[in-house]
Length: 243
Image (cartoon, rainbow, N blue to C red; front, side, top):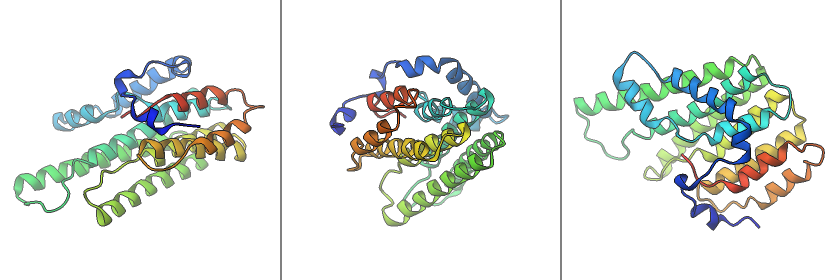
C-alpha cells in the first residue's frame, strides 16, 4: 500500500536524482533553457518576479518527458511541451500573489495587483505558444482543457473558500501525462492509466484523501508490453512534494 505519510516526510531538499531524471538529463537541461528564455523579458520587475517563481524542480516536465518518450515524439516537441506545463505552474504561482479577502485598494495596491495579473497571464500565453509549437491538435486541445480546468478551480476556490491555498498538482500532473501520451501516440488504455496515476499522485500532494494504490496497480497492469513505463511509475512512487 502507498503510505501518504511517507510523502509528507520528504522535503524538496532531501530529493536526490533518480534513474529517470538521469535518463532524461539532456532533455531536462533543454527544458530549463526554454523556460529561462521565456521568462527573460525587457522589464526588470517582470524578470524579478518570474525568476523568483520559476520552478527549481521540474516534476511536471519529468512526467511529460517520461511519458512522451514511450512513443514517437521529436525532442523539440517533447521539450517544448514539458516547458509549457511548467510555465502553467509558474503562472498559477504568480497569480497566488493576488491578495484575497478585503483589500484596501489604493494606487499602490492597484499597480501591484495589475502587475501580478499581467505577469501571470504572460506565463499563460508563453505556455500556450509552446504547446501550439508541437503542431498536434490533440495535444493543443488537451493543453487548453487543462488551462480551463485550472482557471475554473481557481475561481471556485476564491468564491467558496477564499482563504484556502490553491493547488494545481492533480490537474497539471494528469495533464502532463495526458499531453505527453498524446504527443507520443500511445494507445488510449495506456494513456488513460498514465493520466489517472499521475492525477492520483497529484491529489496526494494536494493533501486530499485520494489513495494512489489502485491507480498504480492499474497502470502497472498495463506495463508488461510497455517496460518503459516502469521507470516513470517508480519515479512517481518515490518522489514527494516539490514546488
